[in-house]
Image (tube, rainbow, N blue to C red; front, side):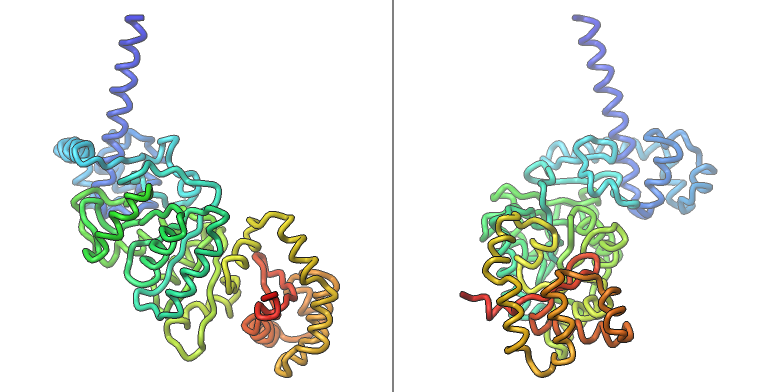
Length: 397
C-alpha cells in the first residue's frame, strides 16, 4: 500500500510538470498555434529540452525562442498555475483526455484551453452561430427564430461573445433553455466588450462555459480575433453565418470551418444590404448551404428523426409538390419548372447531374438555382444536392 501511495505521488508530480510545460508554452502568445503544435509533435510535451537553435529550426521566431529558453519562464508558468487555482479557472492541455476531440482534430488547436464555469464537455450536437457586430433587426430576429427551432434537439450553441449576432445567439440559447459557450479573444480575467459582463454572468449561472486559449492577463488584440474564430469553428459540427459584410470576420470563420471539413450554412438576405452581402456571397459560391429556418439546418445535418421526415413527406409529398409546381410556380422560375418537377419525382440530385440534364453553364445554373432557393422552391443540402420543396408559406397548414 505504501509503495502504491508513493507511486501515485510520483505520477501526480509528473503530471504537474507536464502541465507546466504546456502552460509555459501557452504564455508565449506570439507563437502561432500551428508552430506550437509542430513543436510538441517534434519534441513531445518536454519541448523545453530543445535549445534556442532547435527552436529556431522548428520555426519559432527568435524573440520567442529566447524567451522559451529562459529559465525564468518556469516561474511565470508556476505563477499562472497559482492564478488559475485561486480564481477558479480550469484548463485542459492538448494531451488531456477531456480536451474537446473536434477541436483536437484541427491542425491548429490551442495547446491549452482555459475555461471558466462548467467544465466543458462537448455534447452530441454543437452549432456555432456567428455574424456581424452591426446586425440588423432581421438578423437578430432570425437568430432567435433559428435557435428556437433547434431547441427540441438540445444542441450546444457556440459563439464569440461579440456585439451583434454573437451575443444575440448566446441570449437566444439561454432563453430557449440551451447551453451556450462563449469564446474569448483574451484572458478569462476580463470581459470584452465590458458591456457584456451581465450576459457572461448569465451564461455561467445557466451552467454554460467561457473559454479562451489566452492565459489570464492577456488583453484582446485585433490579431487575436481570427485565432478566437478558429476555436469557434473547431468546436462545432457546423457553423451558421447569419449576417456578415464581404470583409467581415465571419467569412474568416466560414473559411476555417470549410478547411476543417465541417458544414457551413448561411442565411440569405436582401441584396441591397451590406450586412447580408457576405452570406449571399457564400451561398453564390457554393461555400455555404442556404437555410431559412432551424429545421432546414437540422435536416441537412441529419438531426431530425426519420419519423418526422416521413410525416413531412406524407404531408408535403410528391403529389402536393407536383401540383404546386404545375399551378403555382412564379413566372420568374418558369424555365426551372421541368428541373423542379424532375427533382420532385426523382428526389435530391447533385448539381452536376442537374447541369448535365439542362446543359446550362455552371454560372447560369448557379444563378437560377439560387433564385429558386431564395423563393423557397429549392433546398440545397450539404454536399451540393438540390431538392425541390414547397415554400414555407404553403406549408403553414
